[in-house]
Image 1: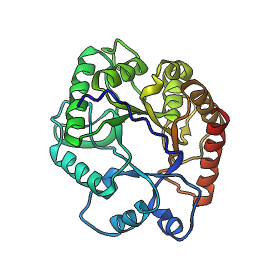
Image 2: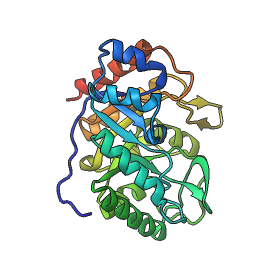
Image 3: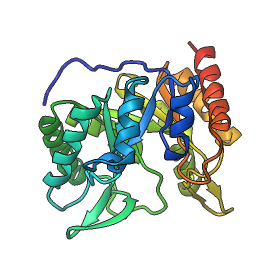
Image 4: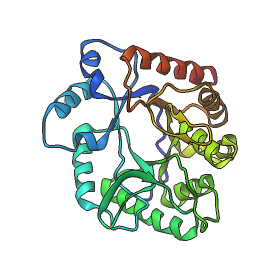
Length: 277
């Protein structure tokens, strides 16, 4: 799917949709511009999840974010998964669909983890062809997110940011830039996160994730169960000053706090975003 127009629309400042907050969202009018859903949570035939989703999508823009496309795997693309994803997209009518630059399956078995790739020309060619196939199947560009990482490969001959940049160009896809993951990987692999951000093409950055993590001293684990730390807020400020205004959201996947607490983080992101525009 080759499309010369890069539709990088700005949605504002959003939040990951979680079951804990369904009722409060529907009973009130929280100051959130849009919600991101985890695609796999709604790839079902019915039930409470879809009931609430149908009601929320009438009030807020939605985007879909997946964790199981396994775009970097050596396994064949899972067409059953992609068919379910496409059906969900037809129901939700999301502004866009995203997943992670990683592999999650091997030999038909899902690891339920976001495993890093070796960054070289062979992998680049392989992943670009798979992205093109997925985009042709879905009939739209997808966003790929940089995952946090804890190991590297000896066969890598380029950096992660070089790989992601070239992949977006080769596959004509867009990027979901996770600022927290850049911070985590920079800490774990001893690189300057600003170097990563400086290498990005602003025209390809469609969305930003902000989240918390667990610092274990020698390494950081991307847990999404804490508030965003000050250093990541500072890196987000740098990102916006460098790349310009980008649709941004707060992620929280565990130890889910009251909605009001997350709204304060959304407000902080909005304040930073607006100050740089």
